[in-house]
Image (cartoon, rainbow, N blue to C red):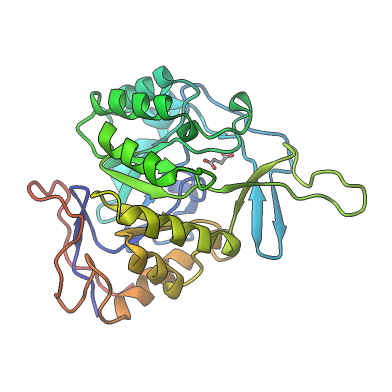
Length: 321
Ligand code: SIN
């Protein structure tokens, strides 16, 4: 069984499974272990203007239903990401699509990031990370919770790029549907739902936080109902493709998101325990019958949320991986 490629926010994907930002570096780090070309694509680690060393260790702690992380957006900064990391992706990935994730402290930083990356090769779209819960300068507050800042970022970034802009939103948003509508009205071509949920793990012995930054973002199985609920709620309110992320460990979990209204899914925490989890999920999905649109192997239902017109990244049908 093979999947027909589907066009999602003007980009052709060979299958719906992507690696989530922050779980695959810039691709090269995983290339000896994961067949990136078997995936729909990957999202880079979020890039900031200046290099960041990240938050104090330990940065990750597990619990019985997932994990909490506070990496603190550790990354080499825009210039090194663009000049040293992107060329490897441009040279090595033909079938898998790359989304570059960017994160700023200010509206201006997001704009500079998109402007600075736009001329680079090797990626199909931007994922605008508006929802990191671990940015100490923002006190753990997600950028997307400030409506004026959200719309300014998307509107001003829109003017800097012809690539699709995908806004990644936060789960702890009491007005998520309104935020999603505002992001789309400002120019977002798609939405990634959702980032990690703010959380804290304490050592039961001494009561100290188990991660260095104190609080962090919770991911893994416990996040899945939150993510599926977010996709389900937003799918009826906007007319752009959605990427579902949170707690996907297997093809059934990916299908929950696809049935809720996502066109693509991202696998994150599962990759830490099983680096090839995303490959397995893509392979297993390709064997399923009657996937929801835009992936319906039966040929029923065309690509949902697909934009008509140019297909800048046409790909052949996926071979089983
Ligand atoms: C981090 O680097 O701390 C995580 C980034 C994110 O959750 O957006």
